[in-house]
Amino acid sequence: MILRCRGSRAVYSGRVKALILSIALSVFSASAADKEFKPLFNGKDLTGWQGMGGPLTNWKVDNGVLSCTGKPGSAWIATQEEYADFELQLEYNIPTNGNSGVFIRAPKNGAPWVAGLEIQVLDDYGPKWKNLKPVQFTGSIYAVQAPSERVTKKAGEWQTMRIRCNGTQCCVWVNGKCIIDAKLDAL
Image (spheres, one colour):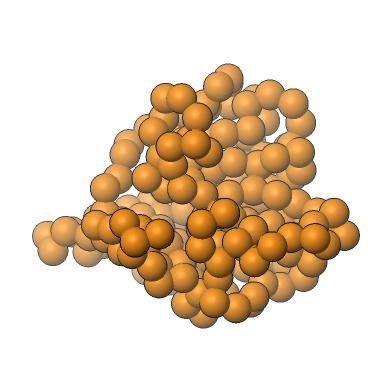
């Protein structure tokens, strides 16, 4: 998993379902042998994460919340472990005009925005983004597949996202609503 913030603050927090108490990000393997969620973020520090294109100076942990400052420097953070088939659950809070994302099926070397897929996290209603196309809204597979509907809350409110990738099938839920159900090889 790779997280990105661009020119604005992005916050990922620890209030995820009871199955994964007080964990900001969690994932489970899609294998039949392992249906338990595995925490990706311990709520204390950046153990298990690495900076991409620079040190982790723009990422910090405060009161169980992982956040990016949006300042110049490494705006990319990736899990040290790679995942093939997975389900990721997270909560996020994006400020007015905020822009972030979760990259999937992306290489750690090179440019993930070129070779991977971004699930967009954005303030859809921010004045800066008033001319967006549907393939740029939150939950979209950025520039590839638009969400079936816009279900985001106002900037500054906590929201939920769930991403499931199994083979070429990718599903995205925002605030409990399935808005992407796509075969990646058909896009």
